Length: 555
Image (spheres, rainbow, N blue to C red):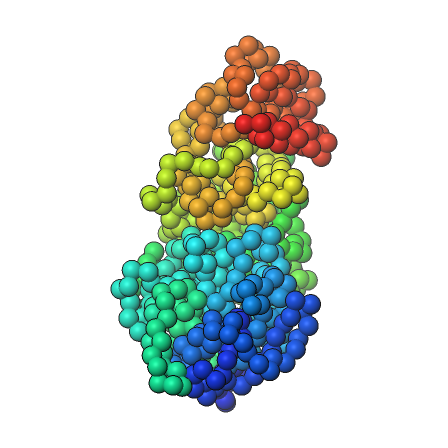
């Protein structure tokens, strides 16, 4: 959990990570210091801001206008072309951590998914130090880092010109993670007395929110990031995607730095995830075939208390169920959720057995994630065209074959060839590996084919070169030919026990399909559009990828 801010005995330190500040253009009485993180990641004292500093200077002037109690520090990273590297951005945030900055205003960011991990790591470090980051999203509507992260306040501007002065809208269900829609048009007076009007840009909406946050913090210096978000929401002109109590029911797990994983499994349905997008301190498994149900609840509580002492640095407790069908037990039946909240740890419950339910209020600093909460994020954007412009690879798992890791490893193979990949799963477990989650109901039609609307939303947001969709389906008949006939995917991978010889006479030869069999004695086939492989790890995955890559390039 983040540290609370100290009492504000003096004006708050606000750092503007941008193009530099020219203190001669406006009366910036609060301007204290300017440094630069150069292309070699060296910190140098900036002595003369050039004409390229207009962007950062306008941001400073907006903060000067609306904030009453502040000291402004300029951290220059943008060059004369308005560009910087992700390493410069990370180094700038690190400088802020080391120099007791309280608020960071960033009208810059990256839309490159390859920068995700580096920026996420340093943002979470700043969050742990109690630093508040206000970050502008891309004006093109792309997913932007760090604006998209849970541990920042992401900002977009009002493009419909309905907001005036310091007005803003709070969005609880923004798909791109930006919570605040603020006024970006400001009238500023320079030292010559001339009036300058800023454009309706995300860059100039973010410093308004920074100013409002600084005013809140000066009067209530112990407010945490989450408490500030609630105050912003409560004071907003309009709240979208309510109800208000759901602000901490998160879409992504980008806030997790270290977790303890608890698993409900049985002898047939085991947990075997290898790839995580965060540190895992321990994995504790409970075999439902062996546990004593009468004392199970107390056993779990005792185990959690033991782990909390052993792994104090863990910030999240993750509860996973791999058991489906009649033998399934929902975690909520064996967890004391009210007691869990007193553990002061974030809570993730990955249990696809439970349908949508009443979402719990979390007004403190505890994040909550559950697949049913994800429904509040609008995955359908009607303005998007009906076509998807990039290849879709659908991976159907009929047998519980380690789909989560297979999708991860397949995505990594595409990325190794410089392809931007968006990976999607229809099970909540995918989020631990960084995959997007779309529920089965929203992702698949009644015949098991893909519904394109939610995939279109993610394509518009991430701009990938390839989309991989992992589909775990243990409930419908393994009818590959029916799925292919109605499939919207450009390529299909089927994970099956063994291949049925009677299907071979009905293949469509113009499709691109791979069959991965669990049993080695499956029926072998290799013809135009089809290939069957015995799945035995990296070698067979490499062969499947090589075949798919070749076929997709030929189309």
